[in-house]
Length: 113
Image (cartoon, rainbow, N blue to C red; front, side):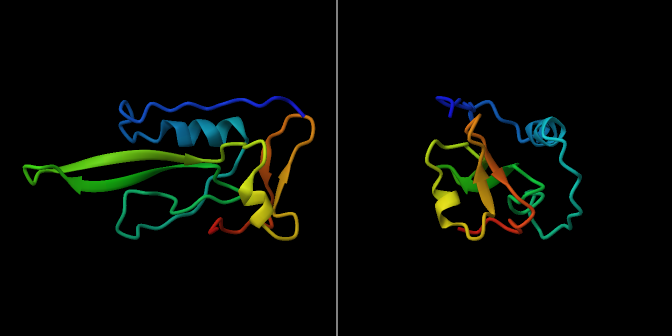
């Protein structure tokens, strides 16, 4: 297995454009996912075997009481020893021996670990 790679995201520069979500789907040749509005800008709502990356939205208030947004890119981090794979059942999540990539399978309906 390879030594692995890191994905570094500067969250201070994120504008939540979700271009990274689209790029991830294109790079991994993943289909579009039918979604519905549930009162949040997060779309889709969770990671799945068809969605490897999403942008999380967190709203808060600063000391002046003004609203602000924090954005966090949630994605598979392709860990060398993935805890999600250990928690999954029936080969829902597998690790490619050659590249070390952590891969979701169609058995992974919703990641809710």
